[in-house]
Image (tube, rainbow, N blue to C red; front, top):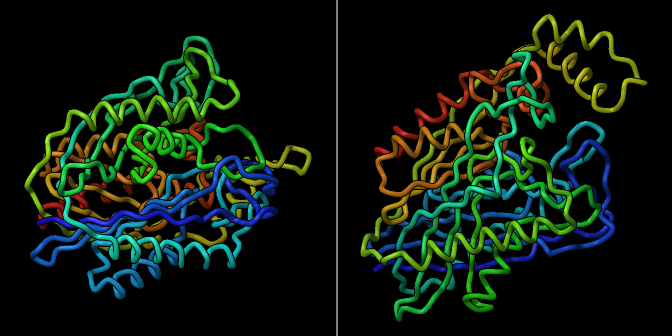
Length: 423
């Protein structure tokens, strides 16, 4: 018999704390929605265990993830390799990182967040009960949009508005759903997986869970206040909510509409799922080191020309270019992870991963159903496909959050697929 426990804890920061995610300093002066960490704990009769905790934060550091995973594993008597922590990537959460002069990590909040992630996992385990699960794949092709473009002159750009441009690639419209029912057949909860950047609220100075929170609220209106919907953001480093080719949306509260639409796709998929007797549960991870890249001669020459009056963005990138050149190549610790729950595998990478890597994993995964978890167990910044390490592509513009080499994502994917074979 498979057992599962689901739980949520509030992780809303105090007002006045900084909000990461934009090229300006923002201090919270209000709350649009409270922020949460959601946990799902799974256990089978053979001793197999797995935990996933998904949080309304922009990312988490490697150190926070490592310490929290170890603490959860210790207190739940399970391997850390079966504990996955991930971020929804909301750009309206707490100060968990330092990024230029635009946000500064807050150690008090980070300690609080670590304790809350731990508590969510432990409380979920304490509330385990017999369940049956099932898996499904849905489709939502209107909310997410590819944001890297080839311009008519052959150059490249991210978030462009140029007549005649064309998107370099395609989104992943799949809506993955893990359905979780109580043993008596009543609804308990679900895990939903979809890939789209979580920055659709606008440049506000208020905390918000963005469209994942609106999705969760809508599902609870359908299935009851006690229903527990978890959202895991897929590989969405180059996917966002703005349709640059056909016009952008500046509608106030658009993120709530996004959440309702996504909830509709999740619910439609959920209702079509047949429950399975597969009780497989487990996890595997691997830690290794990648090497950072260095700025090229053209970028270094540009950095020397930047002056204070050239604006905060140019000055940030110029400063980062000089810093990374002076420091030289540095090791980047990486942990990749696979969880197996029934007929599904969840692949986690610690960064803002390009959607193409999700497609590689889904095509080659040995599992019948596949989810991908963006920003899982840490963050190494953007992980870009080889073809888009180009001038004009924002996620490839070298800085503290864009430091990996062109082959990084491919090595991570190959290691994940080998891990999956062990499960």
